[in-house]
Length: 136
Image (tube, rainbow, N blue to C red; front, side, top):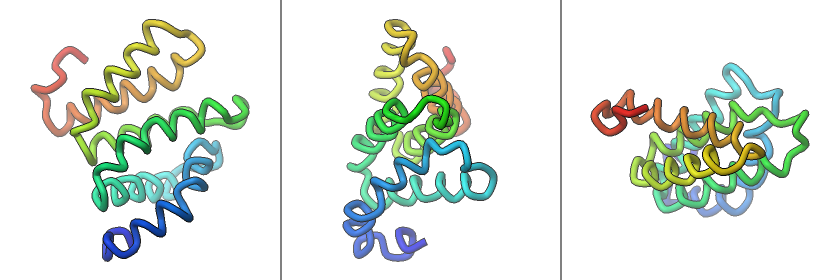
């Protein structure tokens, strides 16, 4: 909420003090429903406050999920968060899709998160601008 009301004043503090914890929460299997909606709104507000952060948030979400205990990680939530970041800053869409499409083709180990993220990002972009991703 503070990021929406006063992004310039709150962004540096949120980035420094809160963002690391948010990455851990993003892959928690306990996050669903209203909590997940709030998390998605947070990422949207964060990227709208400073669009340059989007290029850091996407890989950090993926790294956090990859480092997590596999039985405790909800990759679908991480994919939704990545999709929300891409939807909020479509300037990172092409790079994000290119990175995850490589993982889908090359590595089975990363394919679950890559596939979820790739499809979520693609779906989010299709809903806003269908001609951009007709092949998905």
